[in-house]
Amino acid sequence: MINQRDEIRPKLAAFWKHPTDHADLWAADATLDAAWPVNHVSGRQAILDGFVSELRRALTGLYRRDLIFLAGQNNRAERGDWVSCVTHYVGTFDAPLFGLRPSHKLVFLRAGEFYRIVDGQIAEAKIIFDLPDVMHQSGCLPLPSLGTEITFPAPATQDGLRPVGDGAASLALVERMLGDLHVYDPETGTSAGQTGTDGAWADDMMWYGPAGIGSNYEWAGFSKDHRTPFLHAFPDRKGGNHYCRFGDGNYACVSGWPSMTMTFQGDYLGQPATGQPLTLRVMDFYRIENNKIAENWVTLDYGDLFKQMGRDLVSEANALMQG
Image 1 (cartoon, rainbow, N blue to C red):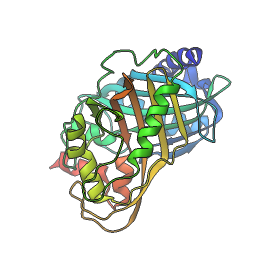
Image 2: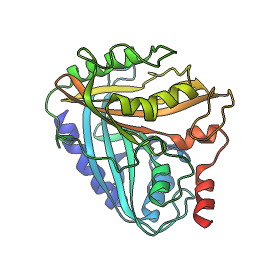
Image 3: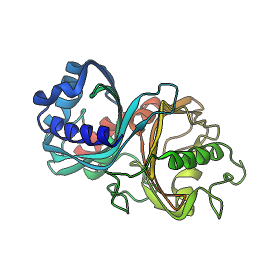
């Protein structure tokens, strides 16, 4: 898959600089599922008009800065050749973005992306861009922050763009971790197989999350800033409904659309519990070192999650910006 990675990555960079000249990167009947409020777009021209043009209008001088770029054969039922990446769309926020008022300052719009490739073209795309993080950068995030809000860093090993190896061992470790994580003690919130000598996570793990959760350090930080509040709010959460999983060298990635189903049973990020059923779109990217998960980049569609709760984060952010 090295040739696939090396072929698609420069094409994506060129496409975002000059979409009209490189529109054939997308199949004519390509589909795009993207974070709220885009949701679903069908067809090359609709993707250009409804998604690409929106970003390019909003972010002056837009270009991509990739942190991780992976390629592999999907091991789920859908199969196929896929590439995935963690990237930032960089530019000056000069015009409204999906209704969000511009700050006229530099922004890094981070995104997790999965692309199914057929005959050198994108046939299917899934993109979770972190619009709430742009709100944070603009000083108008209408959510509290549990962890530390930072721009996603590149892997500590600086090898995320050209992994070496087939990735089978990396994916196996991640799948073992996910299986163990599924079951937890309701009293303590702990799961077997996560930490310690035989655990999946490194003692000095780094977890990079979306705006509202933020990033954290070591299992204790992850539990305090994300796992414990999330399980309090959604104790019956069930994940793992993934359309794509693959490994590439010392990396692995998984994604579900949605991945998680749950009911809202405890207050979360200032929102009172309602008991309603909810779903969550998820993308995870893992770096493995010494057979342990050392870093985890996570994009979650919190715009969509809070829309299901009856909140429009864009409208709330605009009100904060005006006030």
